[in-house]
Amino acid sequence: PPPPPPTPRLYHQDYSDLLWFSPPLDVGSDQAFSHRDVLRDETRRAKAIELGYEACKRITAIYSKTFYLGTQMISPEKAKNLWAVYVWCRRTDDLVDSPRALITDRQTLANQIVLWEQRLANIWRGRCVDVLDSALADTRDMYPSLAIEPFQDMIKGMLMDLDQQKYRDWNELYLYCYRVAGTVGLMTLPILGTSRGARAIDAAPHAVDLGIAFQITNILRDVGEDADRGRIYLPQEDLQKFGVSERDIFQHRVTDQYKELVKYYIQKAQLYYESAERGVALLHPSARLAVQTALDVYRGILTVIERNDYDNLRKRAYVSKLKKLTMLVPAYLKTRSMPQ
Image 1: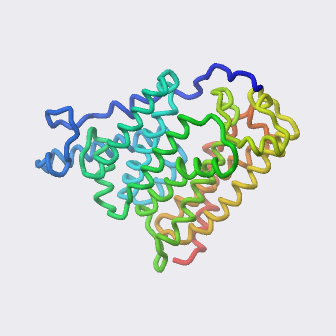
Image 2: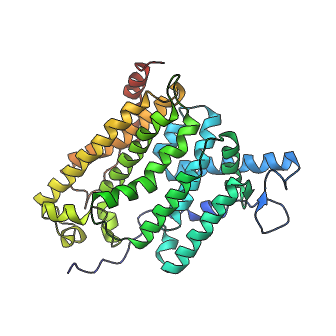
Image 3: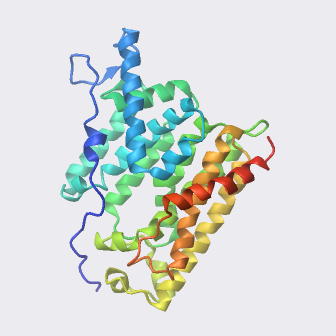
């Protein structure tokens, strides 16, 4: 039997207070309220939305420098809507993957997820609890084609994180990757828009594939950290296929067999990146540089893993800020060569 997982360690500074203690809306009640119907004073409503977007901007800049960098390359109007979507996703993930979640029992976490799904439904009705909700509700108003289903699917992904420490095969892991990351492509596509003559239905599969590529990259980057938390995302079927034991991963042993497994998943990720890159030309020209840059930066993590001789158990792969900046020119040249 595999050894018991080690005691979880905290790797990142906890910014959860930013996510959960945002300003409530001043309506004289602890209940959710309609930012359209109850806040009849347009000045107060506009102020709440403005505060929400400003808070979303700050949180995005702290939690995801790559995503924030991408939003600096599109119009301020679209950027703030993307921040609102990102923060909702960040809060959703925080329910099960945060220092606070690590010390919370499973039933309490499950109850919180149920309440969070109810809160999402209220946001879609324009009923909000705090200014972060209000920013997402305003984004929903601005983009009527923004569907609730990808948001609901992401919540299902959080339940998978709650109940599954391991994945049997690629099909199981793919479903998880879709729910926690592929959905983001569907959330952001209505905001980014499509090029002239392209339909959202044509761009959607490529948007999902970009999320899948990002999540495989996340998994490969974080194998060592996840192992320290008692979690292995790489499917059991593939561990057996390549002759890698759970003990190898929990004890951070980078064997030749393990390197072959990592190579295999890098190749799998590259296939999804290739599909995603074909979809960039389907996006509205104003959105292409941001998406291409994010794609190139995240893809660069795989290059770093290769440079580290596939040791993602003891070395964390990342792309430096300087390297990210040097990727801007190639990304710009790629998008400039696409049909306008």
